[in-house]
Length: 249
Length: 223
Image (tube, rainbow over all chains, first blue to last red; front, side, top):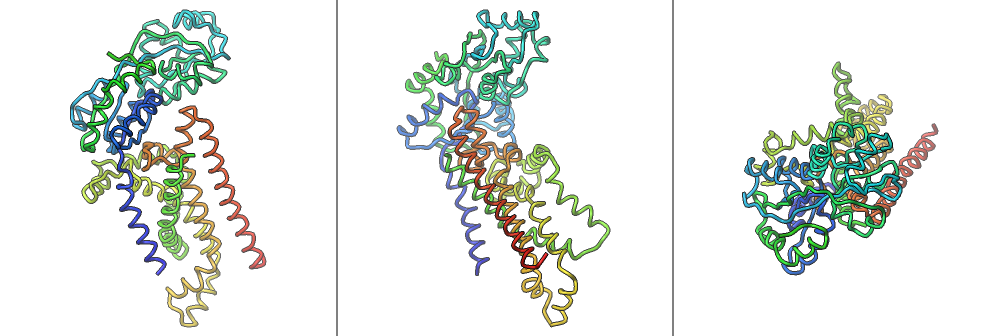
């Protein structure tokens, strides 16, 4: 008797679970965390659909999608990863440009480093041996890390700065690391920096390079996904993106 | 407090225990009874998830559950869903990950039963099944409780494997421990703290149950 009940419950749960999650599944680059949280309620109100957003580095999300993760749409911080998915025929092939993301060099109030001259300050601190740690996202799978690396290469200090680098899992974690007292500076998303809880904790200088944020529908996505992509191009979404420091044409 | 993550964690832990009770008992019973050459190897394989880094286990599970692998492919043909990054996939992984925590206590308590008791039961005309359910199971009860409690709390605390094969999908694979990590990254320390306290409390309660229960049991049999 008891066993029967167990199995019925088990079957019930297995059967119900996939239906339980009726919402649109969004795989989003970590730097979109704050802006998407603001866009979500507007989208849900105007369409009646729910969003379930997972944040991680674009490279991490790409690996997950390549292994069959059931996302409906992918918002990447780099076109490279989207291209890889298109090549593997895992998308519907229609690219949507969302915005250009900016990045900045940040130093918390505990850091003694002056960053007024941007990356040049890092190169000076390197020469005088006054540098502690510098946090960036991992260039191997995080677009922000890749761009940070590119900036450091442009400055000509990528090789020399290696022993001082701490690599974060994604852009959000780089922000997290930037507040540690051992960390002199960090290269992190500008969109995170202007959040009140961070803006009050340090100073920053904007950097030159930008990242193109694109979106694409994953193969086999729910019909409603189209509406989400359209919504991301509405004036409402663009205004919110601008308010969060993204560049929108 | 992310109640959805709490629900997922609880469901995962309960279902893992439900699966491990018959599975663990079968394996433990088989191991307790048999004396053959390869026994050590089998015990080692079962204990492996205990010593392997979760990333290694996670990697093998990720590759094994991929849509192009034998197991993952079969699952897709049967259900139309992919196994990796799904709740079922996570459940499957938890069963493997917590297997040693279920088998070891069950095995120890089954081994402690003196063979004379079993033989006496057979002499009294009890069948093997009846001996198991009426004599061995009640005697091994503390080990089984320990096994279930440990499997439960271990599944609840699982992080590395879930991170690798779960993918942090809300309502499907975002467990409490992943939600804590996510909250810290989102600077939501308030939420991370609440959820950490919840997990701390559950862990403390479950482990206390194990110790209290085991002590009572040893007093009952006069050890």
